[in-house]
Image 1: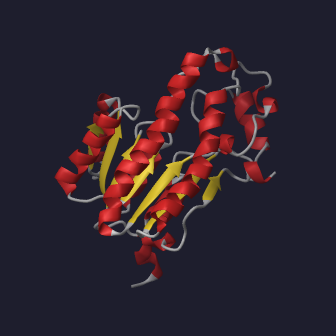
Image 2: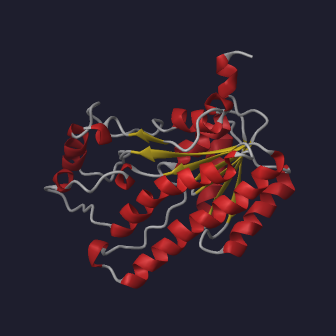
Length: 261
């Protein structure tokens, strides 16, 4: 078998959470194009069904499922639905994120707590639920989607002259926590043949970003630009596939050098 064959996900079953957003769509497309039987789950089933129709028109098949990451019973029901349909699970991409703190650093403690319920406790719940399933057949890859904002503090200069703000304490808190939790999961399940790694994206440019922000953010990177709609795909396939069979417990920033500056 040649080296490129190791990047194939043919014969593997993948579950991606939170697949309808700007990063999620890249991830779903990547694992589906690489050949995995692909399930996508989030609270908003309608957005996933719309994505399913879009991908179907392009010749890609995905199966949308609904779940609430803050509810353990819902996570277990999601696990059972995948197993009932596919019989196994080989790849889990934890991309779902809940952003309730609309008032940034001025928001109340209850809102911060709600964010942790989904983004921290929920991540623990789903890693354990799906990790235990993978352990039964002794192979699997768990990919936690972090952020460069889990690696460094906010840079006020990139927001100057815009109405944007980077002062969201819950996001920095749980994205920082996912890095060491990734190492914990890698250690806990390693003897069972399960790998766990983290991918930390930089900012993905959208039409909503004001030109000044794009310019200031881009200047902060080595490559002079924000991420596009496909920049995460190669790293996801690498971590999901046998090409990374000896890689576990690591964090890969995909950020044009933002965190290396």
